Image (cartoon, rainbow, N blue to C red; front, side):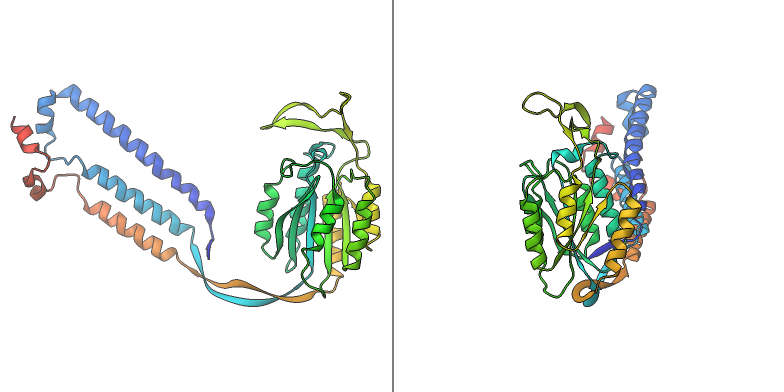
Length: 348
């Protein structure tokens, strides 16, 4: 397994395509000037000592040198030892509402973006807890199973949108039922964090929460949205085309329904949290997790990484030396072979 210590240096790779553009422009400009000064039949006699192919070979060597030298600057590292380590933590599943109502912008930049930001901030405060991610709308969809790979979780978060689940609605009960299958241990604290605007008026969500309680799951619900509500924008590629309307042609107003969110949290011994203030939400979740008993579990990871930059620098320097050694003049013994009938053409 590889790690890149300083990926910001990859930006320097832009030098290589710029170098190629400059090279071909200069060759074109040089050829144009030569043709303006000499007749075409005399041009080859004037530049006879200059190889046609070596400048291009030197360009390739210089490009390879830059490629390896820049890669060396990023300091690639390779995992050299895979070991089993023990961690202490709790199991946390995030269930994120991706129904169309989460596109409402009563909380900037939108309800869904706010929910994703909250989850990301909560993850930043975790140390050794395991996490999973579920997306739900009209049905629940597993995105990430229980893992300690926080980076992977954030990648899935970035790609979440309201088009992820085709069936629309807010099936909180499906999300709760799916979350209970994520927890594979009996003696761990099982936490389900639901982020939603609560637009689910079904008793099924409360019934599902009661069943989850029997399996030891505690639910924290985070309300995303406002009581005043907002319209639901219809966008494509960032362009606004209008607002969602009901079957009567009236513009739909979506409002936060914290009642259902409070109820499903209450029946499990959890807590409802207003998601407006990010710092308060993160602080509350962190404090609640800190007070819980941490179960010890085992996981595997690469524990030692060895620097590999020296091999890339060595290769880069080798290509650089080759670039300096190769001259643009023709090699005499190669010229005598007359592989491209150059001598015949010049004599004529």
